[in-house]
Length: 438
Image 1 (cartoon, rainbow, N blue to C red):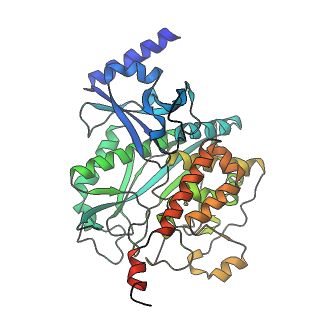
Image 2 (image 1 turned 90 degrees about the vertical axis):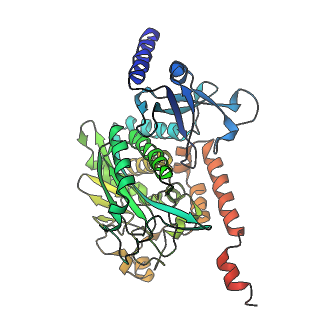
Image 3 (image 1 turned 120 degrees about the vertical axis):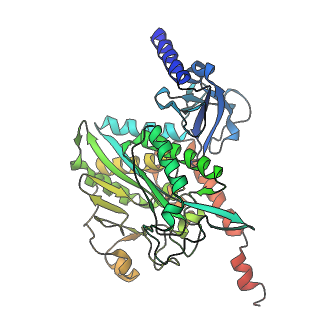
């Protein structure tokens, strides 16, 4: 077996060398969904696959690792199946790393968290495929002020605008070409509902690969935007008077090669039952709750869900049901794709195990209903602040168990600190309103 692994490693090294690769980007993802890593010469591929590239554990957000002893070292052990030359970085190939500490899978590594969740799903004879749809902004910063990169992008309703979309075609085409060269099937790119906002879709895949693809997309988009002196942003809502960015998940459940539609209803029931806790994972920033608003938004029409409901092709509900799949509309662009998927799986499995009913399908436009009408129907509301969502997470044993004994308390600690820091910040709005009022 060792000889076979060595042969496979040699084959991979030769393939990468033949493609002009001299350096590996060993990449992992921290708790906030931010790509981290280091460069390693290709000749050390064997070490990356066997032991992993080493990092100081306490320097990584969300690990809660000590500063001394064997557990102070974090190793990103390369997954050979993910090794891929990066078209925008000549001579460099990305390889995705799984977290290991003291030679054991690290329970707080987001990719390991997702692996555990998918293993539980497999025990039920099920697998999961996801298509993740990233929305994003292209921005510039001038004089301390942020604004859309395209200053002529100012239509009242800019969705699908074919004036501003072509003005960014250089970057958007380069991004699509780079992802295609990496093996992704890019389906479409469009202008979204806000000024400077776009969406690029690629085909669905198994859940772990989809999360890896999303991180690859972010790496490519950051690099290509920076080359053009632009800022690629997945901040959920950078402008109060514009819609925010979602990260919608299209989800299908499978038994072997057959759709498992018989359990999908209960899976959705689990997502609705655990919606409050899931918000803390899928909408993980204080800014996220400028997007998930109950009632009229400053930006007018919003596609962000606020009500815990499901319905056929209903984009105003938390879960939009479609033939053979459903769309989970809670995640926003700042979500960690591994943790969001893992939390979703845990909630869905709880729904299957308890045979939870998601309730009647909602066909109304929920944004047209008053809050009194929503309450009269027994439809719950999503949390309206990060603090409220973290409270829900702390009470939710199912979602906390999915995060694990190390990550759950650390995640809650970090997010409470973020909410507190935000609450204590004195904003320009407050100064404008109160400084001379009294």
